[in-house]
Image 1 (cartoon, helix red, strand yellow):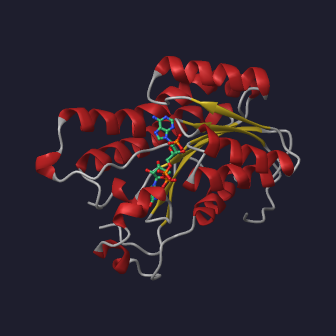
Image 2 (spheres, rainbow, N blue to C red):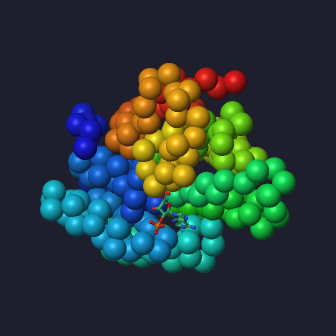
Length: 248
Ligand code: NDP
């Protein structure tokens, strides 16, 4: 866990995709900084429980909620349960995502829609669901996990490029409209990070082109999230955590 000087004591954080990979590292880092955490998973509840157990053992409150963040009613039920059991989220991390590799000629409409719904619409649904309580409180932090693929071709496909570029547009749009309400909205754009998602890509040429010469660690993305949360003057930005991968 990255050591943090950020004090999130008394805050409630909701981390989508908190059961594995980058989301797990973020959930643990937020708890380490003092927050109570709702660990959201899709299907792997046991993985979520392992994260929550670790957080509880460190003295914070944690719950696991299984939800499909691309479905409005599922998101509303999730936020309602988090509100009842932990309190309304002060911090939302829209991290859940999918990266199904498709070449141009293999990409069909169903996969395109799935990518947009899980990677982009989910952030809209979750943000809309937590906003009323953040506005009433006059404080909120929203962090969207984008990708270098928002601004490069990447290796996943155009469906993923489009979803992540859209997520950065959503970030700037919300940031501009919520700044006066005490709510910051930023994006973190990781390069290749050592998680399950990166597994199919591990043996491709991509990794040889990372200037630092290795995959990133999930904790390195979590460090950037903590930095963003600590700064009330930082909003509407996308922070790259990419080992020097060029954005052209
Ligand atoms: P993983 O595949 O390791 O984990 C994905 C997480 O998202 C899991 O917790 C999964 O839940 C959850 N999830 C997937 N679909 C849904 C859904 N419909 N509803 C709710 N939760 C869902 O991914 P990473 O940790 O690697 O990636 C996290 C984020 O970082 C993603 O947005 C990804 O696009 C982005 N990213 C990752 C990079 C990488 O190299 N790893 C690089 C750049 C960006 P469950 O465990 O239940 O399946």
